[in-house]
Image (cartoon, rainbow, N blue to C red; front, side):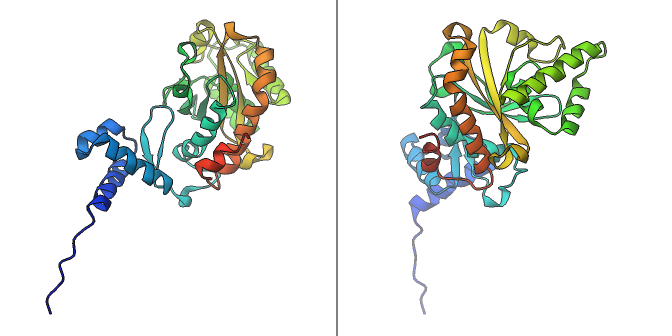
Length: 279
């Protein structure tokens, strides 16, 4: 019996080539895919859109890179930062339609917070460019860091403070830091003010960049008792409004976004569901 000659589906082959390249590189630009696979960018965009709708890849807001979807097996309160960024990305895009200022999503490290996503590219604001991914932020001198430090368990907070404590740090300065964190917990959000004397990273930038910022923790499951898995902030130029006015206008939207991200870490929604989160 003669075997039938069956042709392969060329379009499917090319789509799989794109998917495998994204998976192999972990983060890849459209130009890099074009150079490697020698496919027209318009064709690649259609394939990436299709792969995205099937939940196989996603596009990071911060730099437009395409990343592989991490899958349901990794959905947990202890999810890696890449998965938290993937879940948060559509919510941060939705937030950009509600609030006029950009945000960053940051995850904790030993002695700093690290930016893992930002919606800054969605805004044309030279005065409020945030990021890029990988930037290290101070626990002490940024709203982003203070929001996490105030929300985490006491044992974790004490360990972080011990790592950050300078050799010449005074008891009064440490008491002042604890007071700042206590007030942050009580009001439910963090700001850069008041300044603190410890010479941790980001201090000089905060002093001279002419910006204001507020941040809230992202709690596992969206609940206060779940423990923080990261923070999300909002940043604006100081000359564009008083802290109180901006906070009053946008704090609720920021908190809603943080709660939605916290709930979604365990059960990843579609982009359409995320866009409805703040409606």
